[in-house]
Each structure stands twice: as structure tokens, then as C-alpha cells.
Image 1 (tube, helix red, strand yellow):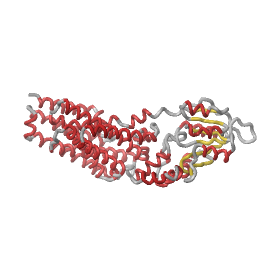
Image 2 (cartoon, rainbow, N blue to C red):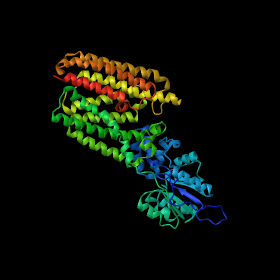
Image 3 (cartoon, rainbow, N blue to C red):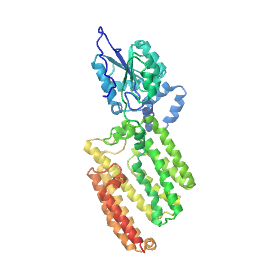
Image 4 (tube, rainbow, N blue to C red):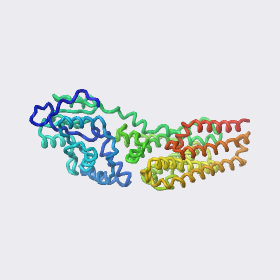
Length: 489
């Protein structure tokens, strides 16, 4: 723990004391690298899509009633919340040196009680009660009534705590804001805890730019038709940017809805919102901004592309809210979302999508979606879990899901083989016979991906895995070489 000054001794009653006996600690942004109002909203929203409407109606009555409603409807697992280790260490030292600690938060009392019971660090626990919102001046009045002016120390992180610090006998601040630090340091006794690094980098990571690789599927229609004029390329690039912006918007919302599930996952617990590296309250505004930007670009590409992008957004939102919890349906939806990108590329560029391309896309993307679930099930079996958190699958389903991945992947190779035998190929490629080299490479790659997943060596997303895996990159290079050779006059 890094403190700007050491904590003066806190001794038992009857001995001269340098600090008040009681340390009141704020929750949101101080003890917790998150905000319980937003945590409960997204938890409740994930369980019931009607939550925003109920929350808007309750908000008219005030913040305290709203917090009570969300606390009642949510199911936040307090054991995996992103607590600040520095703050916890400070509290433990305060207690070890004879002081008492109270959790005093604007979060609902039920949540405060659950967190206090989990941490076992507090002598008293006070939160909002559905009528009184224990924040700012209300919190200051409460602490003065409870302990007396100057008879408590207070640890907070925002300017909203100004009056609380003004009435305290000791200020502890966890903030990089010069204004907040100046407000807290106006007291004769002041300490500062360095907060973790800012959340801008965390928000950028939450956009998952590495996942934009999937949106390169919008170029398939153009590549398959060998149509590389300036307008077609420009419209394809516009489609790629629009899909990337909207996809990142969806990723943000998905991460907010999946907070508890991500925190229970060995790797996903490091995602920015789950770990507290990104401020949870930034999630929705940034998602809205990305969605608006993507929609504007889509509108410039025409109403049909805007419609396809709208279908993608609605489907992905439905997937995040409900469909991902249903077996088989989730895999079908994931395969469909990949295929929609291919269709969108055709709509944006005006290049017709062949039946062969659609059939191949459906089968290979169904296989990769099944591989994604296969990898999660393999991890679940290793960890001894009875069920994948937030999904409808059980470890016993592993064999069946693996068979689905193999069967669909091999059917996609069959579709490719039939396509190479068609008259369409002879008309497009002067050296069409060279394309037969694609079939064994594709068969090898699909088999390898499934084998990697079976061994637990697969990334959560097989597309991202393929972009980093040397074997996959080599296979892609071979397929590209065969395609270029076949195109030579």
C-alpha cells in the first residue's frame, strides 16, 4: 500500500489520540473499483429486459427508491467484485492500530450489508434505505449526528464528499483530481492513497479492436467477384468501419451484462469492466456514441446496408440478453452473425452473393461457433465445474458439441469441393485447377482447430486464435497463394 504519509497511531480509549477513533469508508469508487448503482442496473437488465422501463419510472421518485428497486431485482455476486487492495490494506491497518471502521455508502443497505458480511472489516454498516440517499450533504449530516463533528475520519474519492470531509476530523482521499485533493487537504489532518491508473486505456481495451478481424468478412463478396474498382473498395471499407464501430458498441454492452459471469471466469475476469480497469459508468455513453457513429456511416452506404446492420445489432443484443443462455440456439446465432457480415459486404458493394458462398459460410461458421463452446466446456471440465456460468451447457455435453464442430466443419469442406467443380469457377479463374489445393489445406486447418480446442489450447474465440496462430497463418497464406495462382492468365 502506498500512502503519502503514514497513519498516526490510533490507540485505545483513555490514551491521547492523534486521529478520531472511527474511520468512515465510502464504497463506490473508493473501497470498490466500480459503482453499485450501475452494477445492479446491468445485473437486473441481464435478468429482465424490461428493467430500464421500470428503472425510469422509479427514478421519478428519487435515487434512493431507484437503488432499492435495482438492489431487489439484481443478483450481484459480492464475492467477486473488484475491491481495491490498497483501501482494504489501509482499513486493516486502521483496525490493527485500535480504530473502528464503518462502511458508509450511498448504495442500498442490502448491498452494503452483503459486502460487509463478505469482507468482515466493518464495525458498522450504513447505506441508503429506499427513502434517504446517503450521499453528499445527507451523508455529512448523518455522520455528524452519529459521531459528532470532527469525531470521525472519512475516506472518499469525489468532490461530492466535500461537506463530509469538512465536518470530519481527518480526511483520506483516493483521487488524482487536484480539486478533490485540495478540498480534502484543507483539513489539518490529511492522507492520500494513489488510485489505480486511469480508465481510458481500459475503455479502449473494452472496445476489443482485435475482434475487428471478424469484420473483414465484408470483403469476401468483393474478393470472390474479383471486383476491385475504387468505388467498390471504398464502400467495402465503409462497411468494415461501420461494422467495427457497432460491434464494439455491442461488446461494451455485452461486457456490462456479463460482469458476474466474466468475474467467475479464469481469463475473462481480466476484462476492463469486470476487473475495474475501466469505469463502469463510461460503458453506456461510449457504447451509444459508437452505435451512433456506425449508424451514420451505414446510412451513407444506403438503406439496405443500414437494414442489415440494424438486424445485426438487434440480433447481437438479443444474444447478449437471452439467446446465449440457450443451447444450440446460441451456436446458430453466432454462425448467423458471421454470415450477416458476408451478406452486408455484398449489400454495401452491390456485388451479388453466390449460393455457394452462403452455404460455405453457414457451415464453417457453425463449426467455429461450436468450437468456441467446445473450448469453454473443456475449461469447465478441467476446473471441475458442473455448468458453464451464464450458458446452458454442462460438461457432459462436450462430446456432442465436439461432434457438431467436426461434422459442420467437414461439410463446409464438401461445399467448397462441390463449388470448385462448378462451371462458375471455370468462368472466374483461368487456372481453376490450382484451387483444388485449397481443399486439403482447409480440411487440415479445421481439423487442427478442433484438435486444439479438444486439448484446451484454444482461445475463447477461434477467429482471434487463427489470427495469432502460426499454423493458421501458414494455412491462410497457402490458400491465398492458390487463389492468386488460379487467377493468373
